[in-house]
Image 1: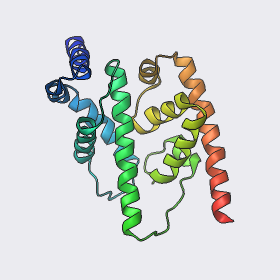
Image 2 (image 1 turned 135 degrees about the vertical axis):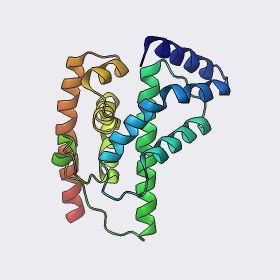
Image 3 (image 1 turned 45 degrees about the vertical axis):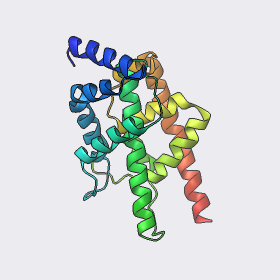
Image 4 (image 1 turned 30 degrees about the vertical axis):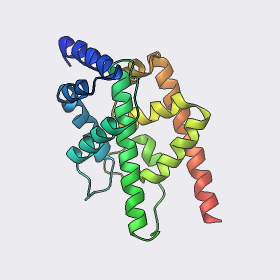
Length: 195
């Protein structure tokens, strides 16, 4: 994003936070391309033939952003972090809706080895990963956000560090720890489901 656009984004976020709803309407066109990139990255992790498309994911995220409670955003990085969280929520809600439609049909568990390796073409089960990430967030919210931003949002280590206001080394350490923790939790959940 150009510097002038980044400054404009920051100003619009500030105005929106101060209660100017028109600021969000001016903001979305400035950040739409980046939101689509994030949504595309999310959708690449979903199963083939997913009924939700990239544009629909961005649009649903924007609707939730506009219809949500008052949000105080600190800066551009905070906005994109929140956007990644909202996209994850949209996908989780969509997956839960599909599971209900199937009347409790079997849901395959996600192998964390597949998820954390971020291998293209893997059909990650968003519900299982969401449960594990929620459990991680209860223990360490920053580590959960690191996984969310890197795995789902497609953020680089540097982008994640900037958004979380931590060092690159901290992000790398959090990423390593969180992958191991999630693997343990996912394996524990699989064993409990087998019992």
